Image 1 (tube, rainbow, N blue to C red):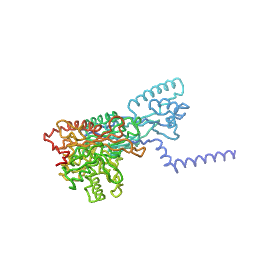
Image 2 (image 1 turned 30 degrees about the vertical axis):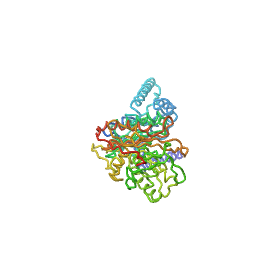
Image 3 (image 1 turned 90 degrees about the vertical axis):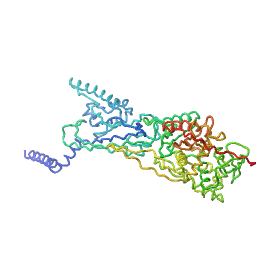
Image 4 (image 1 turned 45 degrees about the vertical axis):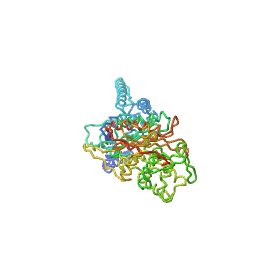
Length: 602
């Protein structure tokens, strides 16, 4: 009896010590653990700001969606009353969510977890479908319990949280500019990435008591930090003009079976981008089906040799340095020996007797080499002067657009130019640019020699409704107004003269300035020349410019590869639509009609 009494006393002593430990010594710690299991913290996603065009037309917005979540504890055999609840639930949810059943089951079996996300940003229709299935299983469970059964319900722990889903109402329109939103809700490219912080806002958080996976509305201790919505972004582009540009470039790329193409329209007075279209494109509503090579914005990310559209820079240097004037006579032979090679023009021809305006109009490589050779007493001096003008026009540095992944192009220092580069760079080979560079060059000439930093964003409207305009773009004088005016007249001759290469860019009733380009293309995979880049650049009306347009098509494989034939029509379509959209009337003034050739006998 004494031994039994002693044993009982020892057991009771252990119980007392343990009770003291739990209720007195470690009471706070156990209480904290209980609170941790009882309360659940959930992120309140901020509503992402909208993106609109310059007229307020929606280009990107967010709609109601649901994150499908679950409480893994409710899928244990004890809680669900089913031995394989995770597998059964996963099999039911997989076809609805479009997910792998094995991955879903793995998440539902998470040991010790009370919260897991099965799928993010699902449509209300998806959640309604899940609710219908849950309702069926809940009714079966009640009926089973009424008959004395366990009442197993394998979907009781499937829940939802309000969220939002990014939608692009116009499909692939302006996708290269807008970019897309990743599965984690962050911007994955374009404006969505460039202005992610402004658009995203600031997430909030709510902590509430829960029981059995459901919120307890009467419980104390609920804490909530409201989410702050993101700001709306207004772009400079015009949706209708963007549509016209995208259609024109897509049709021409498809017709010529080219690798890709791009076209940009820019307001010459403000620097605002009115349209920037790429082909092929992608639908940001469904990135999973997009071709990886089409993602991004090739108009600012691709680099290539510009060809003859760059001659406007070379002849701008010649005019500005007063090395020649518009009527300077240039005798152009069929071949020209310089350095280690013979240079030629696009076509074999007898000796041409051209004015400087004729060199531009007929896009003569030889004439351009001869003209730029007058920039210095020696070729190295001429190279240094020419290089300085390419830099002034923005070649070799980013345009200031601020777009993610924009390339600065390639322009080597003049002392590093090879023997052939000294003579190819004047006519646009041996250096690289992107399409935004080229557009900016012609905007500069159209704006009287003043380069305006290109812009895509007009401003942002915050949650309080206040509109904050974007920072004013930087302006830089590149050449004199007189030089710019002369270049405009020379470019007009390229389009207006029957001897010019840009006749397909003519627009009835308007004076049009433009320049063709056809250059050898460096194949990015082979690392050598293969195929061509066709291009056309210009502005209108040439005497009172409002819009600059640039088009380039990479590696056309069917039909002509000439810039005038391929990109001239694209330029014309986009320019006509732009002039109509902006309600720009014809000026009614007669063109200068500069002479293209001269009589050698006089």
